[in-house]
Length: 316
Length: 175
Image (cartoon, rainbow over all chains, first blue to last red; front, top):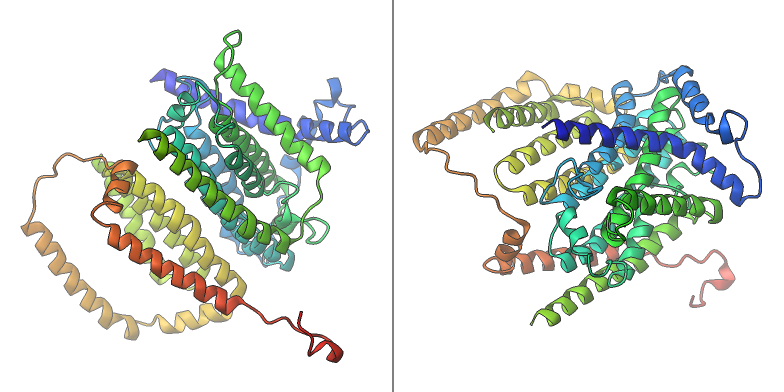
């Protein structure tokens, strides 16, 4: 039982520090790709900028606008952090290092990510502000639509491994990682994952050049900090899921322990997320929805049908 | 298992009562989400983890978000809350709730009469659900599919728009 609490504590500690550290990593990497220095004054390589940012967020005035719906306004930023942290409950970091080995692990992840929509929607509605409302409406439709393809893309993995349990899915990749038989599924999940975390290039709910700051225009202080940390936790979650489902999770050559393999692979995907931000323009809102429903939706259905047909053909 | 069940059930009942009595429709919808989540917990505890996950994904995660989305677009403010307050007078709700209490009494009576010891919880896996749906209940699945198809075709028909011509010279040309 003590072991169990150690795992929970360790996972929480690692995740929250990763999310905070990503503030610095993202700014340094963006700077590198744009041929400038980025934060490099405070501490070695500017690492202490994280500390400065955190202290600033804590001490800023935490202001609730008088026209806002107070209860919902306070409640909304918590939802995003809660839903993302709950998703990590089912993620296997290494054999045995998992908080809850649920039989319906993958469905639990989908359920929690679908609850994450509420933070955007409620935050935008409670602010009682035109820009926030527009951002929330965009966020709701974007996240609901991309959730559909996300679920359908994941079903290909479920068909191949025959289980919703994430540990069994990783075990099923011993011979060949699912990136090879499920390449289309991987691409769809990657795009849907970026849209779910509303990161650039799909940061349409908060598009700062059109909507001020979108759904969190009215937020300040630590409440804004929760949205901020939630976004970085979301990147870590989607990267971890990509690794678990398509890149063999903790599997790798034996000269490094399994956890290290998991961390290396996850960081590779986090870098990819940051590179997306550095290199891609934002699509228009209607282009995003059209691309989703007219390209990704049929593609993910086809992928699922073909995977199931091949599996059936091989078994008989 | 029992205390967890009673807590979840109590939350479900309380939040459903709150859904009925709130004046602000957004708060009512949020309580409905809480109620659905509590029902999902009950389902999970009584051996239906797959149903519990679907309850959260489909009801709490998709349908309720759509409802909230529409309420958000309608921008109902203080006026509608005032109107709701006018509608929730005792004169209006006393008679229906009296009928409901009689029904509730009958229900409790029947349940208490047929009381059986709780047998062991049977866990229903996703596979069992699939086998049942595509085995004995295949007709129901197919009928639901046809219904959904009709809905999609109808939505497409309603949503289709004729191309608008903005200039009188272009009115008779096909686009």
